[in-house]
Image (cartoon, rainbow, N blue to C red; front, side, top):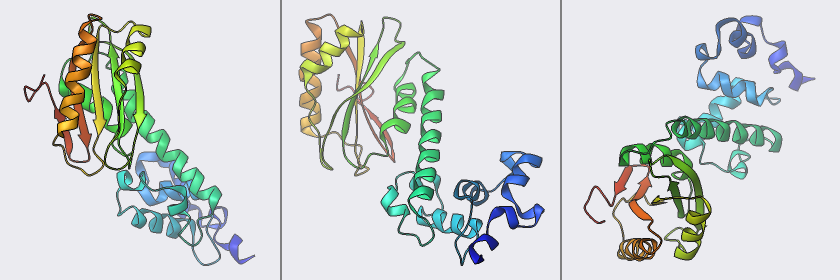
Length: 230
């Protein structure tokens, strides 16, 4: 019975995040109130909002940091079971995909900034390196985005044959290579430079141009083309 005391349904009407959202709109709610709606009900000791505040603290008060936490990490909080953790993780993933979709709607990749804005929400939160490719048509509109390989914390290996095979299947004329640096460093390694030149040389045989190689991290992005490495 004590657990029901902290259910959102039993709060005073002006304290219910759900009621507040319905009357004032979602933009009127704080981050903890929005999370409380996802959590739905509290524990025996804490209300849903109290739990939501603790979840935010786990992410250092930042939704980007919160989005990096695993379900297991969320469940370390007392009162956050598997169902609540899964709901929170699903909501954060939807937010990430919405951000990525907004970038995708631009379609044309006309600069390294356009490319980086599209890439960062897709791969910056991985805790290990991932190598991806943007496959573009002649007008530099995005035909396809694909993660080619995933590696460890310190690196990953991309197969040029797989990249070119996909490029031909997607009728790509131009491609952009990209990978993340979980360490936060934006400096390309010697291996990054060698792989870029290897793929560039191989693509030339198929009249496919490597326009750029973008490295992304929490701190921004690095463009091989902007730095004169292509």
